[in-house]
Length: 186
Image (tube, rainbow, N blue to C red; front, side, top):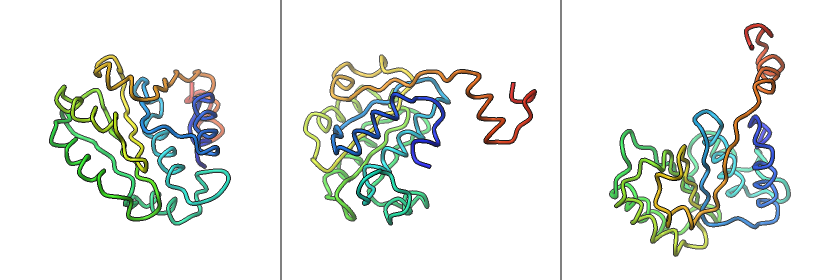
């Protein structure tokens, strides 16, 4: 499983695996790409790898931390998903939770879906956290359009762009992995 469950994005997956193995993670990532390219799956696997307790290849999918995330009840991994715009109140709640040290393990991960929906006030509030993050926290921003974020927010994140996946690769995946007829896959 792990990053191998994500179709395409080979360079990005390689870089994230290397960062996890060498403990060279940054405090904030910005995953940018079109809808449907796997930003949430990549963020999920990265969060799993960050909180994984195994030595060597992470995520291991075997430790208590990995199992908790698979069951959706990991106390150190928080998702911020809003129906409309992300308002300053949501960011302030995130910041309050961020001030608490990890309950289990040594790391906390916050994933902000549709970060481009943050209001300017919310982005400015988040900026303070991005400038002075706690050493135990990683923030992952997901967006389809990084230009709609404040340049100061983008500049404090490691930007990783997701590229479109080749149609042939998707067709092969559908036939081999999902058992779909070749004509239907096309």
